[in-house]
Amino acid sequence: GAVVSQHPSWVICKSGTSVKIECRSLDFQATTMFWYRQFPKQSLMLMATSNEGSKATYEQGVEKDKFLINHASLTLSTLTVTSAHPEDSSFYICSVRSLRGLKEQYFGPGTRLTVT
Amino acid sequence: QKEVEQNSGPLSVPEGAIASLNCTYSDRGSQSFFWYRQYSGKSPELIMFIYSNGDKEDGRFTAQLNKASQYVSLLIRDSQPSDSATYLCAVTATTDSWGKLQFGAGTQVVVTP
Image (cartoon, rainbow over all chains, first blue to last red; front, side, top):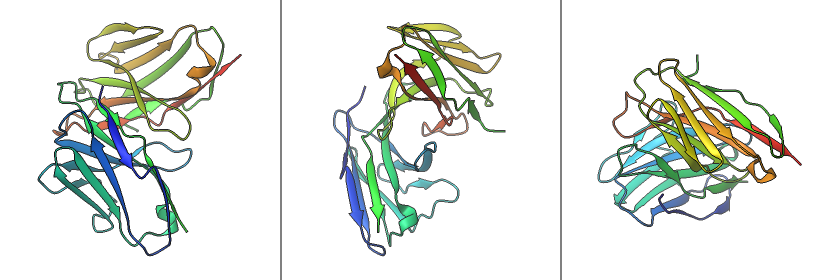
């Protein structure tokens, strides 16, 4: 498999502030990473595909100016939630795509964001 | 119609019994299929993948794939309380070149002692 870390594991912020979440691929270079969001008792929702050295591709309905994604290196992608609001409170999870042909994804441990 | 469908459950299984989880998908071109396990409050963990028709066994887990019927299943033998989790079925999206996966909503499994 792959080892993926996320930082922070949980964060509480005030409404209107910005929060940055880091996703690191620890044991291989990941050209493609994915960002998901999961609300309680709901399924995973893909937010965007993060590609090293290029702009992220956002899913329909996800505001790219609110959820800024930067994939500046082969091991690090960041998600910044700008001007956070209570409705942004969620579990944010990144994943890295295996270099093998099956394209399986390995998930980070997730970041729980609470906006007060 | 959802692209990947699973029964939401909960699926209640006595300890030691076989848990059978089903998943259907709509994209006939999908080539790879995955089962993830997600404990409450945790992120998904890959437990099985399969890409050829038939069965694939790994320990107590068996994945079964039937591309003609667009159906993939997961069997958990000798179910243990530690198997209580939500199981997510995922398939590759043929329209995407970046390796995007389409996930089902998940089936909650509860193993009762």
